[in-house]
Length: 153
Image (cartoon, rainbow, N blue to C red; front, side):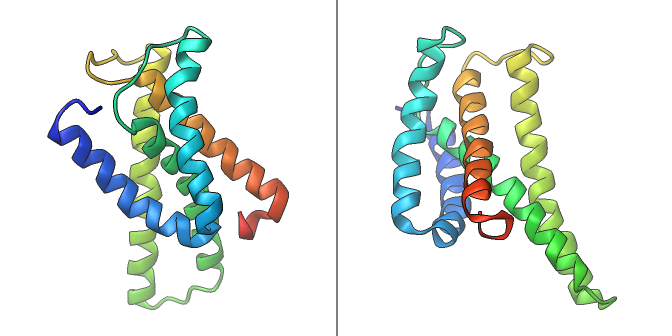
């Protein structure tokens, strides 16, 4: 179900790094439901609504984790900067924390550009599944925020 070793390695790396943190944050039951539902939706919604084809792998899930993690990290960073003093170690940690959502946002922006046609769509990339996953991740964050509040989303 993957387009080669590099594809599975990239998906696995994102899933392990983001997934473990998100699972601890939302609980294993809610996380399990998310990781079962989102890949199915990212696989079939593009086909059902005719904006893309079937995908290979878990790219929709990794983009959904990205779509959820970016606003969570920004909220965390906003709270972190409120209590920060001008200690070089704390500033370095804040910069490190800021670099993660910045990289994830840039990666998500590339997906949006490919989906809208601003950038060309690579042949081996399921852009529609990526975009669907990204949107589902942001919607999941929005739903959790509405249900539990911004700090507990």
